[in-house]
Length: 158
Image (cartoon, rainbow, N blue to C red; front, side, top):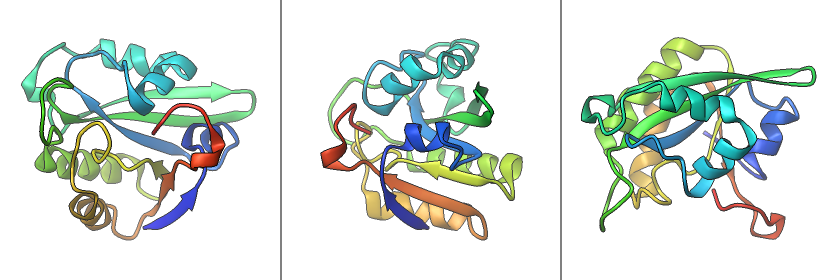
């Protein structure tokens, strides 16, 4: 896993990634964290989320995908269903769902440049050490990059 500091969404629009992946819940909301920013900047990703069944626990570990085109740049936004709900306390991320979603990302986007935030560690309240190990295992031999949001960059939290 490579790690850089920056704004994942800006980097995608600049053509740095072919695929960006973020953790989503199964409620079709995209109302907080990086999902809220994705919804605002890339409504195609929200439409892909809305095309799935709201509140369906069976979505855990699956993905929905939107192709995004901005000027001459084309990339995919992957909504990885890694938590069932956004409400409640404690750990919300489902580690098995992260593993399953990353397997799907590798299968579908093998050989592409993949970027992601600390997926599952923010609003999902997951353990980043455990999550990063899962991501590294499932995206082994892929060009994948953790983009840590720089505190001095401003904007929405990722």
